[in-house]
Amino acid sequence: MKHIAIIAGDGIGVDVTREAVKVFERAEKVYDFKLEMTHFDWGAEKYLTEGVTMPEGSLEMFKNEYDAIFAGAFGDPRVPDMKHAADILLGLRFGLDLYINLRPVKPLHNNLIPLKGRTTADVNFVVFRENTEGMYVNVGGIFKKGTAEEIALQEDVNTRRGVERIIVAAFEYARKHGRKRVTMADKSNVLRYGHDLWQRTFAEVAMRYPEIENNTQFVDATTMWMVLKPDQFDVIVTNNMFGDIITDLGASLQGGLGMAASGNIHPGKVSLFEPVHGSAPKYAGKNVTNPIGAILTAAMLLDYIGYSEAANGIEKAVIDCLAVGKMTRDIGGGLSTTDMGDAICEAMK
Image 1 (cartoon, one colour):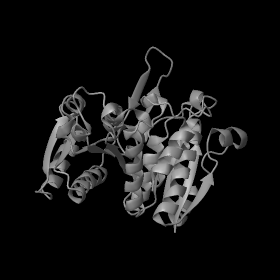
Image 2: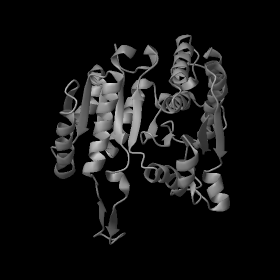
Image 3: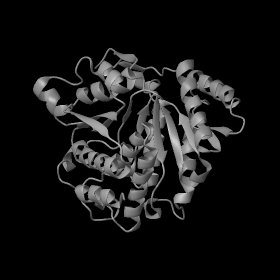
Image 4: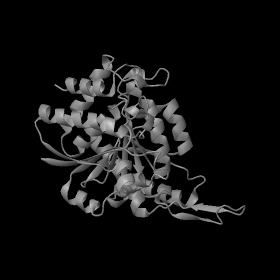
């Protein structure tokens, strides 16, 4: 038995998590395994009523008692500084040292691809985004705030250890999954110091994998080629900020944020899986949200904890539904959130 923590969060996170849990339960029956799912009420409501974001001792609890964490979405207009979201999501990512943000870019139906003349055969790659360093570590400050002489500094932190391990992870994934090329996206023509470290480390790591092609691109060129020639990519590895940007472009190639899954991973340790969309409060509780991203995220989680057959079965069920026009409104169909979840469960036979 595997132990899974479920944190639905805010807004539509509650709606899509309900459907992901439904798929977990269906997979247990179809593929004959058992999950112990524990639900946590962390989110804006708990923060506003109790002043609690992530309770003390939570990180140790997850490390010692759980195999993986599934999260829905966080964000609520009643918390304008998003303190609860930052404490929970960034707290988990940094506290559990989840240095890989893994984002598959794999459209599951030709009609979802916005690129003229492209099919699912042309768009099938993964992005390895460094998840614990870069511009997102909140190193910096503001001097003379609110004056005409105000200065704001935001530091970009890159360590040899951090850079090397994300690049190694990208090459290891390519080797394990038969991918032919690893591409690094950087901006070394302008960001000289941190990206010099990325360039040197990438070249050194690539030598350990002579069977895998490697190349580097400036990130602005990467965004261009993702649109013009996406079939050149197998695995992309990049830093925290660039990864944040290009993976949203990648989601658009899949049919939108509602179709995109992601994992925040430290191989061999408890890891966090969450769909990439936000909490979209205006749609919360209206039963109109696309749960496919959350359901594919559930499949990623199952694959990570050793239930690969179930993960593949879930993806196939999604493909089968899309093939016969069972879709939510955002991707051209008419199903509600719950109807979409039910259809995927029904397709899992």
